[in-house]
Length: 578
Image (cartoon, rainbow, N blue to C red; front, side):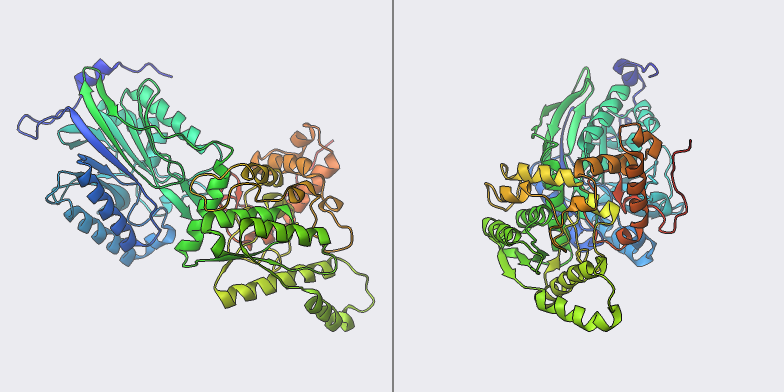
């Protein structure tokens, strides 16, 4: 890293307001509103912002910061191509700006803003009912999650904004991933950085953010307040976990994870710049509980934000459906979860017993709807077409699709959101029946490998995390965790009849999907070449199924859909040469 000047150098070059301007204060109270906006709900988000402004006034805050694109929700995608949507968002911003009149709060409002240069991801700074400054996002992400260059024009390198007489830099989310933006702000005299974000969760993301801000504060010798939104939005989950950091790797406050929060911190300026005089450090969620909380929050918001109150799922007596049922109860409460067992002649008594016991422990409504008669009737009606051909996957899929049909009927009649339960390992290799067990509106396990499902089941049996609504204790019977997984679509069937043991399968899939390794590289890790080639083939031919799968929370960088997009028609095959 290149040598950076000391704090004294920065202070010597600091941009100061003219003497005729507002007096320079040595104290600031800054409020961060870590809220849960809904994409497209401009009026609802405006109401949230107004409530936060009232809270800031009550807290006697000098500054209120909202998260990125707050009034539209993050990220609005192609709603941004609709002129009326943009106009409505800008009018809501003007209305919120007007609300600052008669208060002592300076509002830092991230919003869409149309200028002569085009549409921008912007921040308005408002005081006493007026916009006193506009800042435009410089660095626009262009990844598999956010394609901001599709919608926005990049802004110029900007100077700090003078707030209460203090030069404050306002880098917007992606801006802090590029050292030049914060460096420019510091060179132009910024004494504090306020960074609004829409940063989604995935594994270890909270620590990645800390490392990033730690680097910026060290390089620029300026404290940074990092605000992130919270909540589920389709396949993304925003985990909040806002924080403040001073140079010297000093964490001065930490907001809640996966919950809304209103964070107030006091700052004073001394000979060595600004320091936090009061700030509360809330313990971050652990890496053990974070995936569970992400799935619960993603499910809860998907249900509520899309107008549902209840969820329904097939409870088979297996590990995946038991974990989804527990997540649904944690998200929605037992009264809003409906579990259905749909036995057929191959369903074991053990599975029927385990499913009932799991439902009883969770306290959910539980019904048994046999598929014996409808499946047998379908087979009888198809007999003239099938002839004397031997039984095969066709008959197995009829069972699965009959279960999917009946669950969708319950969903239609009762108005419940149907949940699917296939994990990432199964979805990767196509071990799921399209229009059968894949039927549903949301899948909490979509981005979770099978062995992680087992780990979380055991973990949940000894923890009730966060604001979860489910009961404590062993909610998932140990018998479900211990038994060999099976689809029970033919006599004595287990998953390992068709797939390698899940620890092996997950390791191979992690190499192909998460790490983008070649077959030769995975074989070099100790895996059988023929098996790796088979798994890669299954992965490729199941792409069409995944395109039609229900959405689910993104937990890793390489989630199917948002994170990993491969063509369905794909002629490339990776083979070891020699």
